[in-house]
Length: 274
Image 1 (tube, rainbow, N blue to C red):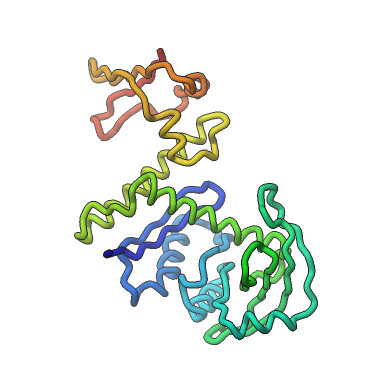
Image 2: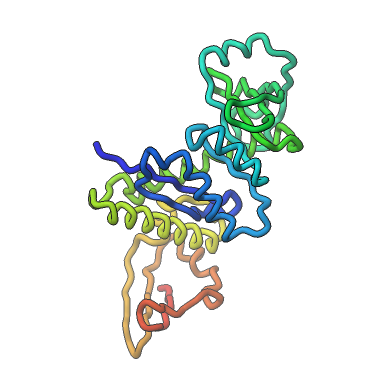
């Protein structure tokens, strides 16, 4: 089965996918973090953000470049059998509490140290985590030497939200069913998925009690359903049928949201409820 190597980057605060790069060549993969940095500098000032990513995204040399440009990062160290075996003789270990109410293993054991990596100029902070529900310990590395270990481990765990978003795109937006093997269509599919994800996220923020729901639930409860559309005198009126969640829609102050549709010559859009 053919596949397309794609990079998606999500803002942790807004949960919006802000960057995508489709059909990346293997020879280009390691440097995509620097391409994203160039994009991020253009939209975020000052640069006080922390990049969180998987160990396979880039190389230790590029981690050194991020550190040289004063960009914080949290990632995993690539572990081998020898590295895992050495953890049995490490001391001291201490127990921490991850500040997350729904975390299944909120009190793992950690061991902290400073290490040198091949290709990295200087030292990085390493936090080995065990007792986190995994068979093998996790090796976190970062250039942030001030952040408490509890917060650092918890922040890295937030990376799973991005992976959940990708899983949602694959399942709900059918991102794995690319419409064509032609390169331009692959880019089109990825961009349209990012736009759709953004629209569903923005809609969810307007719905009281459903702010953190995924696109599938928003579609099932609010988008999917019957109604009528009237086009008259340059205005479009959408009359939505009565449903169980109609009171939630009624509670939204639609008058504060944009009504003009520039892709339809600026016509007005209004919503009515049965």
